[in-house]
Length: 375
View 1: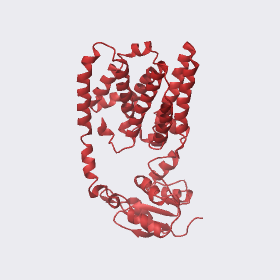
View 2: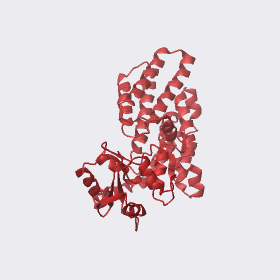
View 3: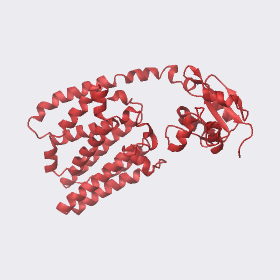
View 4: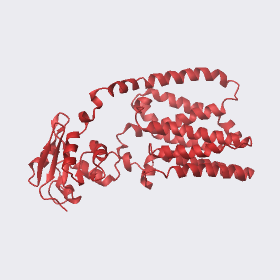
């Protein structure tokens, strides 16, 4: 499955850290059951969640896990009235949630819903109809004949075996997470790594006392190691490519156009295409504000920018791209000179318009300035 999630992508941080967070919780629960306390785990939870929230927006899954832990421990408290245990887990969760606030990332309600797959038209989920990450397990299996999906299906079935034992041990948080993770995973395969990570931990924690489990452990471990080797072998290719010109900045990104804008000390709003948005933020922000980037923070403006490449008329009857430039008071544009094998139609629009002048051109991009800037 890692063919869909190359290891250099930041989602992998979420898969890894979620597993570590659950291991911390499990260790804390076992220590409290034995009458022991380990203050280091609360500190570790704080540090872990702080790091996670600065690595990938998937940290909201961690927040949900911490909330689930408090909810499940609340059920146990109502049954046993163990105040010390309950307050200990409230402190554990509070430390983790506090850590997630030490980050420049601020997500709104729509973005939270998007990350858990409940709002298809929010943030990056705008691509849900075309992005394979939002396909269901069964769509991949039956429509796309991706039989690798049989692996997570088998894991989900295997995870059902120790459910009774987990319930007997009052592992309510684990049972809730097992159900929720697999509901999301079957709906959108983007959550499969999360569900599989937790399920393997769940199986290891709750199946060890079953007499026949020791006979299953060896072949399962062999299968897991083999799968890991087969599915990550392509990462060596990425490392090799990284030492070649194919990942060179000037090969893929408009470095010359950026240097031109920096020398001209341009500040303000810049029209750009989607693929270069993040790079332009890195090189020119915050003095230059890009029109669009891969975060797709505002769906309406994103769709407007996307439609600019067409000749369709805008509200005023003029070409839509001119209305958009005026609406957002954009005085500069950085546009690819090629659209695949063909010259960029949008660059041609700007070059032919008397309100704009080309001030720079190189093999990748052209820069246009408005003749009469809008204040």
